[in-house]
Length: 306
Ligand SMILES: NC(=O)c1ccc[n+]([C@@H]2O[C@H](COP(=O)([O-])OP(=O)(O)OC[C@H]3O[C@@H](n4cnc5c(N)ncnc54)[C@H](OP(=O)(O)O)[C@@H]3O)[C@@H](O)[C@H]2O)c1
Image 1: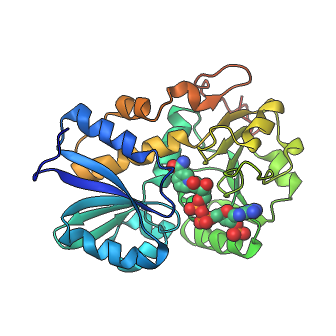
Image 2 (image 1 turned 180 degrees about the vertical axis):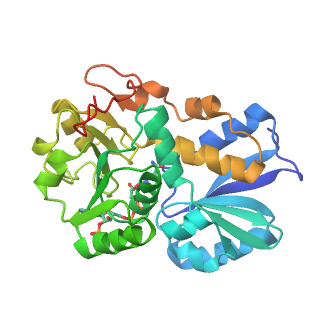
Image 3 (image 1 turned 90 degrees about the vertical axis):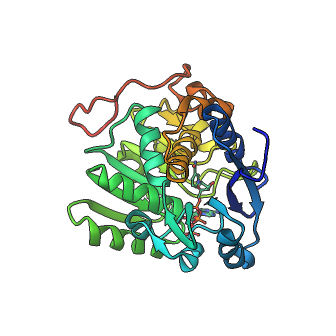
């Protein structure tokens, strides 16, 4: 689309932000729907976040996504925060309405949609083990408890942080069983139907695995919210164990479609955005030797995925 004085600007604030795939995904969507918008990356150092957010209305920027390390600190600069973002305690999407900044969080719902659409899995009644207790973990945990999982175990390097998250969840959802421990609780990992890595471990080539993979059940489903690399060492090890796996590209896609809808009020062109990410569904999910969406898991009453 040619840029003119009418073009609406949206974008992403991150630090670093050079790796981001969001501009390709959103700009393709705007072009497909003929919307006069452009999506730009802004590398905003943490100390400049307040200034950058406060400048949005003055620059008539329509909205931004927020990524590492801004999602939690942004809360203090916003005028309104959606109930879901308040619950999560982090914001990944900001909409500018007049002079107001409204914060949303689409990460949890994005993960859930990916689990359903790409993984073919309804988490209801499942035993879930979450690795990590940061912003992504909080978003994913809240979405999963709302989807009525049976049990949530939060394993984190800093156990106190996992405990804080567990207390928060139990406050809102007393019906869900929540426990916490360090990342080396093998018993919990072994008995989980779904294991989700939300730690930073796996992003760098020399990273080790966040857990010992030898206890991953071959009947389990292992997700990594990391999408670069597309296959982390954890996913590779889980595949070797025979488990089904899913990376974070689908979460990126669906959190993006939801943000797109918040900014534009239009239904997002999911297929266009998926293609722009450089992957078909084939890149999202792996089931042993076959790259394709997994069949909907059937609960055989043993809490495992089939
Ligand atoms: N696919 C998507 O759309 C999507 C969306 C959001 C986030 N993400 C990804 O999610 C990941 C986490 O992001 P975040 O915002 O949650 O980050 P965060 O708030 O900084 O949390 C980082 C988590 O990683 C753990 N961690 C960091 N270094 C570790 C290490 N060496 N060993 C073990 N644990 C370690 C931290 O544990 P401590 O508490 O002990 O520090 C914490 O639980 C990133 O890879 C991000 O790209 C993906």
